[in-house]
Amino acid sequence: MGPEYKCVLSLGIRCFTEIFLKELGFKKFSSPFDGLFLSSINDIIYLLEHKIEDDKLIHTQDDDKYKLYNERWGNRTLHKIFDKDTNIDKAYHNATFPHHNLKEQSTYDHFKKCFNRFDIIEKNKIKTLFCFFIHPTYPGYRSITIADIEKLANYLKIKYNCHLLAIYFFKTNTNENYSLLKNTDNLSIYKINNNSHELIDVKQELIDILNKFKIQSHNLLTYDYFNLNIKQKY
Image (cartoon, rainbow, N blue to C red; front, side, top):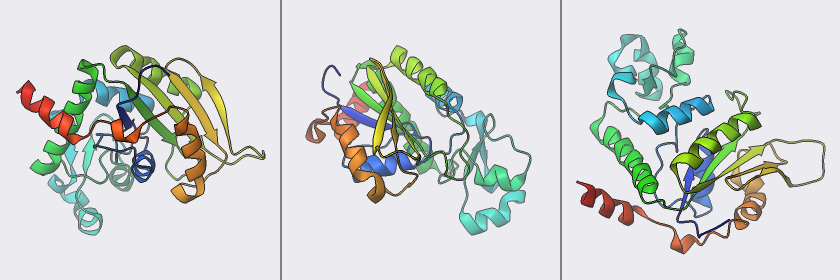
C-alpha cells in the first residue's frame, strides 16, 4: 500500500463511517463529511471542489414553513443544488446538513476549518485512507454502484496521495464474513456480510479489513498538526 498512512478520513455517505472510525480509534480530527446526508457520489465530488458556498445554503430557521420542524428537531441547513425536493417534509429530513445549522457562526467556522484540513492534506501530499461505508438496506439510501465508487476513487487520485476504502454492509446467503470485490492501486471495495449499522455486530470484520492497511494509530496526524499549518498559512 506504499508509505505509511497519516490520516484516516470519512467521506460519508452518512454518519456511520465517522462513528465506526471514531470507535475504532482511527478518527483524530473532524472531516466535513462526518455527519452529512449525501445522496450521490456527485454530491461528494461537488463539495470537495467547491466546499462551503454561502449562496448555496438554505437555513431552515429563515423560513417559517420549517417552524414546527425546527421546534421539534432543531434548525438545520439545506443545499440548493442537492436538496431540491418540493415536499417540505422530505426536504427537511433529507437535508445535506441534518445535524448542523450553518447560520450559527461557530458551526460555519467548524466546516470551514474542516475543509481547510483537506486543502492542507492535498497541498502536502499527506498519505490518506479515505473511507466510504455504505448500508444499502438502511432507510433513505440511494443506489451506489461500483462504477460510482470508481468515479470517486479516480477523482481522489488526481487531487490526493490516497487510497479509497469502500465497504458495503449487506447480508447475503453465503458463509463468508467479508469478501473483496475489487482491488487496485488506489481503490479497495469490500462487502461485509451483515446488514447491521451497529459497530458491535461488524467490529471484527472492520478490524480485519483495516489491519490490511497497516495503520499505526499513534502515528496519525491530529488537530495540532493542522492548527499549526493553518496559522502558518495566514
